[in-house]
Image (tube, rainbow, N blue to C red; front, side, top):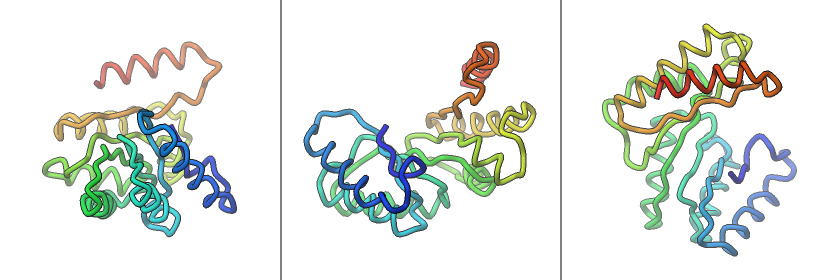
Length: 178
């Protein structure tokens, strides 16, 4: 995973973008995913255009903080116009994104799956991301929508990394949900 979003300070966005393009250009066979900045902002648009213009679009693009239908449509349009293709994985980080996922009648072109962004989702709701009832209900809704749309669903990581029982329980729940 090559990350251009949260792990990069604002003043380093351009340099990180150039480094990702260089890495993908130097290693065209590299199986990679790139997490873009939100397509609601300039950095996200620059991220996507840099990959397209360099001809190094990876097989998977992760869309951060998406306005689901608008950002999927925008990304697909830019990729299609360039003759490029990627599996798009928006992160479900807000109640609005979850609601929009539920409104999709069919999976849009290039939508490969969704990712649960539990920490940002919890923050949006003013909740603790470790609150079991919240996390379980959202995970279940995401899994149901993903199954209905026949796309992949990727769970949020377990934040209690030093608690083997918690990690095992979350992994088991994710497996049960599909």
